[in-house]
Length: 116
Image (cartoon, rainbow, N blue to C red; front, side, top):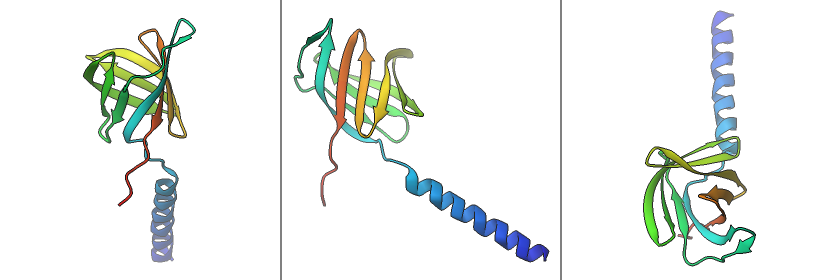
């Protein structure tokens, strides 16, 4: 009976891990800026982008400069940190990142992965 219980618990654990993995969404990759708004004026976009890596690091190209950064995502709440200081906060849902970045509202859309 103990062996059966141990086997049952191990199988249940394996199934629960599989279920958790299948519901996760891959947020890594490149996001292209579609809009920058400052003081209620839409400044458009001129090639700004953000790239999120699996290890929590990021690269951002905005205002003509490329910067290294780190990010966290907890229950849809996104935080971007540059040089140890919070530089942007917002939400990331369904491939759309809306972020307040240094007084500007920036909207980034996840780039579709290249087909192989």
